[in-house]
Image (tube, rainbow, N blue to C red; front, top):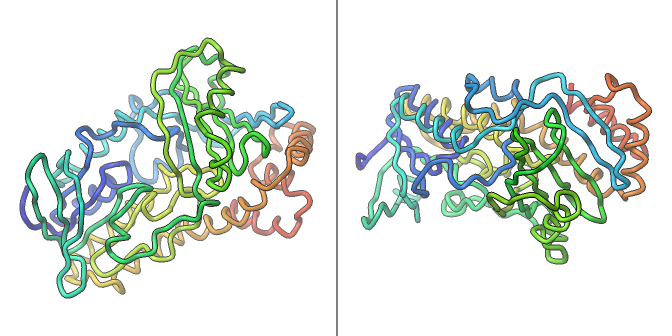
Length: 389
């Protein structure tokens, strides 16, 4: 590790490794820092991605995939089951392998990678970000950089240290719990989603199959309700009722920011990507692909800014503009839809399921799913069309 780099990336999840890879490919000197001792562990994710989005960033390797899925099953409060076929292949990943190899790809592109590197502060010169302070093993180190990219997840401190407003309201923070369990007997062609405003207020429960009876089973509740309902207790109640013989192999808990992108994701010499920038889909909470799309843009813009010798906020605004064009503007629409969808009563959710069940399966598109759920809110149909156009 050197004492000075063009770009330092904090966090080696999918977004961080992708930003580091594309920045290094531009010719910039890059350091990728990860606080954990091994990249990809622990896994705090349902691990689901769509083929098309992921392929825009990286060529998919078969051994990354635990299970292919061809659609989803939506389960209403009364347990009506609606199968929805997708027009693209979906995958449940093995994140331990996936994350590790993304970091390896960054290293192959020329980035230096350092694990057990705990970043605990930023360096500043003339009021502008100029590097990071970190602890590596027992050593206190400082690394100078022209640009710092914060990819340090939902608990991100990098943006806050730089003076950006990174707080998430309780209603927009999904409190989540998940287990990876065996003896989960489901149709492994579909990811399953359970909806109930009474059982899972402000969120939903999911089952993502991983093959051979293994699955990620988890749920998210809006932070507004989590003080009254324990996500872990709700999840255990579901498992006891549906899969009493399941063996729990891993248990994780955490938060997912389901809000529009932060108002500020850049400053002089600083960029935020992934969950650190609140770039997950506000409706689903899925953030792997959207974070990687943002990171690809950020890495390319950062590399170009280094080549230009200009790392000002004004120069880095290109990243904001390209992100909004790619995903950010759509996420604003999703957030508007989310506020209605997650306030539907169980009766309204049941009615929506019955409308969908009356449709031929080829008509059960995402647009029609939202239309059926928001039948009493026709003004939102235009927003639905915008989001999925």
